[in-house]
Every structure is written in C-alpha cells, then in structure tokens.
Length: 200
Image 1 (cartoon, rainbow, N blue to C red):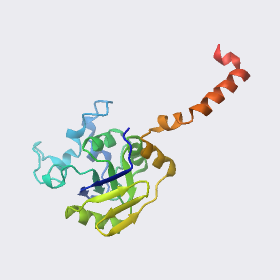
Image 2 (cartoon, one colour; image 1 turned 30 degrees about the vertical axis):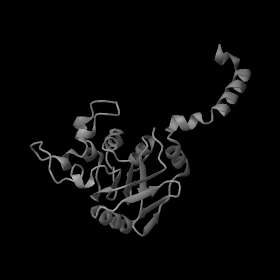
Image 3 (cartoon, helix red, strand yellow; image 1 turned 90 degrees about the horizontal axis):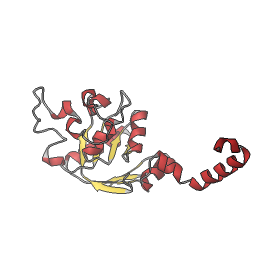
Image 4 (cartoon, rainbow, N blue to C red; image 1 turned 45 degrees about the vertical axis):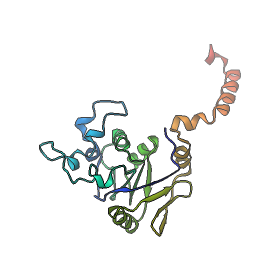
C-alpha cells in the first residue's frame, strides 16, 4: 500500500450529501474481487447519461479537474452498503484523499485499509474548500501535521493515531500487526512450552 504523508493537488468539488456506495460504484459492476477494473463504472450516474454517453461537463472527467488527487465531498459520504469496491473505484480514479463533513463509518474504515485518507471538517470549512476547488486553487493535505491548507487558510483535523500510523507507513491491518512479530514469536515460544500438544 502506498504511503500517505503529504500531498498538494487541485481538488474535485462534489459536495452532494448522502452519496451512497451504489452511486460511487453501482452493484452491477461488483463482479470481481480484484482491486482493479472499477474506474469506468465509478460515479456512473454522474458521469454518463441514460444512454451511456459521457456527460462532457461532469466534474470527474472534465479537463478542469484532471489529475486531481483530492475529492471534496458532501455530508455522510459513503453511506449505504459496506462494499469495499467503493474505495477501490475511488482509488482507481486517482484520489488519495477525501474531505467531507462526515463519512459513513464502514466506508471510512475501508478507505484506510486501501490507503485513502478521509478528512472530516466542519461544513463551513468544506464549503470554503469547494469554492477554492472550483477556482482551481491547489490544496495541501499534511497527515503528519493533520492540516489542510489552501491559499491563506489553514484547517486542522482529528484523526485516529493508529490509522494515521497505518497510512503514513503504508500498512494495512495485517502489516500493522506484523510490526509486532517479535512479540508474536515470544508468545508462540511460551505457548509451545506450556501447551506442546498444540504443535504436534
């Protein structure tokens, strides 16, 4: 998993509230457990018309926000079903960070497991960042300092320390556990002495 420390990027403004995981990646595209191949179906109802033609001025495909690594979203982003395909699709679109007033808990957890930082800020701060994104101003997200900077504004955010370490070190939950492999080996050695029949 790629480490997340600090990024500076333009941002895609998509401040719609209650965007569920079926909007992020419709259920009809959940035909694989691989982590790739979902970009084309991501935000399908926003990017394509009823006939399947790409909507030219949609924020995800227009030239104005091309290459954006930050997505500015609305309140309760990622609600609905718990599909891990949602962060997979967002990652494939190139986003490393999502900023919103709030996130669905399971979605935020799935993002962390896939190297995507979710930043919760007050609605007024998110509104200001949406305006900055629409104006094309770059935004800097610093996970170590837990700050979001844009023009002359600086916003701070809270973040779980364990999840912060995971993202900054590029570790998923298994990788985080293996940091304690010395302690695991000590436990196994003691267990083998106390309950040798488990190792026969």
